[in-house]
Image 1 (tube, rainbow, N blue to C red):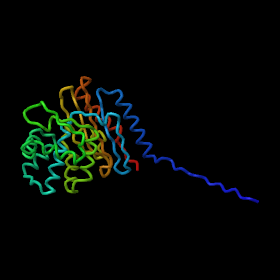
Image 2: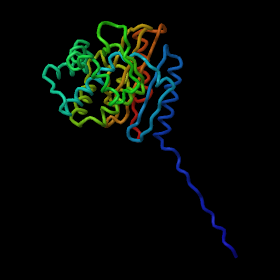
Image 3: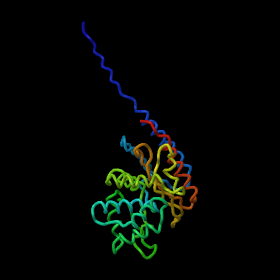
Image 4: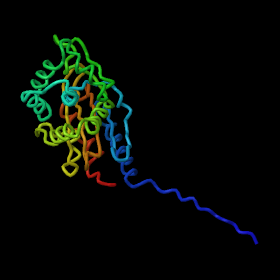
Length: 261
C-alpha cells in the first residue's frame, strides 16, 4: 500500500496593523480628493519600514517655515562636528524657531551662519535629505534666502527621519522635546494625531505667489514611531483655515489612536 503525503502550505494573513494602515491611507486619500488645492504627503512607520508616498509627494511646493527645521539640524550638526560654536543667543533663536516659528530668529541665524554668499545652508541641506530643494530668486535683496525656497513632501520626510536617526542623540532629544511643546498657535497639522500619540511638529504657512501653502512635518506614537510630512498648496482654491483643517484632519485619519503592534 502506498502512502500519500499531503503538505499544507500555510500562508499567514497580513498583520492587523498592516490592514489598519492600508485602511487609513485609503480613507486619507478619499478625504483629500474633496479638499481644496494639492496635497503631497509621506507617511512612514519607522518600526516596520512601511512608507507610503501619495502621487503629489514629489511636487515642488513653497517650504514656508518648515525649512526652519533644516536650519536647526544643520546648525546642530555643524556644532557637533566642531565647525562652529553656538552662542546663548543662537540657542535662544533656535528655540524660538521651533517653539513659535519666529522669523526674526531665522533671519539672525541665516545671516550669521549662511556665509558671505548666503549659500552655506543650501550647500548643506542635501546631507539631511533635502535633495529636491530649490531656492527661488527674485524676492528681496538676499539670495538664497530661507523664506523663498521650494521643496517636496519627500524632502520633509527624509529631513524628519534624519533628525530622528542621524543626529547625535542629545540633539535629537532636544529637537523632539521642542517639537512636542510648540506654541498653541502651532498645534495643528501633525498635531492632529492627538495627545495620546504625543505628537511633535514643525509647521509652515505663507501666502506666496500662487496662493496659500500650509505645511506640517513631524512625528507621533511611542518612540516617534510614525513620521508624517504634508505640503498643501492651495493656489486660489482656499485659504489658511482650509489648509490647517486639511493637514490636521489628514494627520487625525492617519495617526490618531494608532497603537496597534
